[in-house]
Image 1 (cartoon, rainbow, N blue to C red):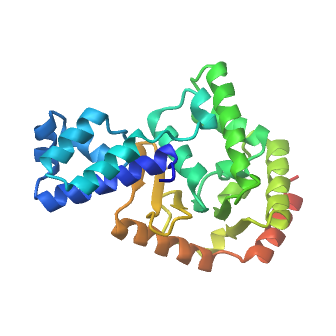
Image 2: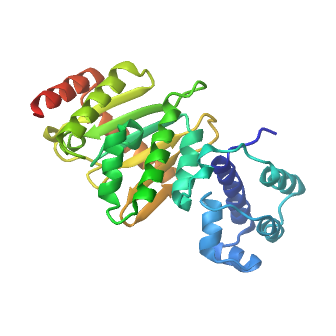
Image 3: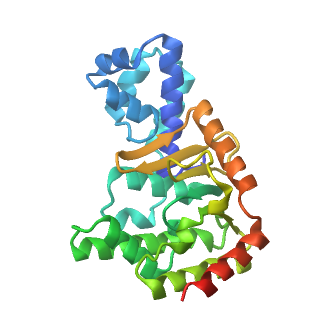
Length: 284
């Protein structure tokens, strides 16, 4: 059995447990009651946000009267030791840990960025300015650690084996907002142009203001697609109210359609580079 990365492993176990629960006819609340856990805990286990403990897994398998073959497969999957991950040295909040685990195992990221350039396309100075702006009360040491983490994340685009494919639609606001000041923003624009022109696995499209209203005015989102075609896509939405991981087919289909529409509205790759160069010239 191939060893899964921690994030994908959690999702596989969660999906199997959800299927078993639904087959058994139990609700989330009833399943939680069977093993002395809250319904929110069962929900987090099923969506892969939280690890399931061995005692919990055995209890749920008993509650669902799982077939012996399924029981053995899930217990073996839980006990399989995942490869060591580089981000374990960082003290990340649980949801960010979940996200970077999924990102590291993804084949493609389809992104819409509304307010700032996506993390994987940021320069060091721009990334630090974003962190300072979004976390004004955070200690300098925390900002330094998060900055180092986000810079290291970008290696998914240049890894030797199957580098991540990034398809980013950037709202025009990402180009004009002077994050970190004028010089910082100009360097960020130069970097975006270089990435778009020279990195084959990076696609950058600009969505100009002139295109008017569209389906993603409410905010940015990321769709993560995986190499294994049986592994469902995940939609990640970050907001001031918290981070969401959407995995139901109706949700992923809605965002898939939205991203396709945004790409259709946006300038194509050549036009986008030309547009970014024009903004750079005008940004004096």
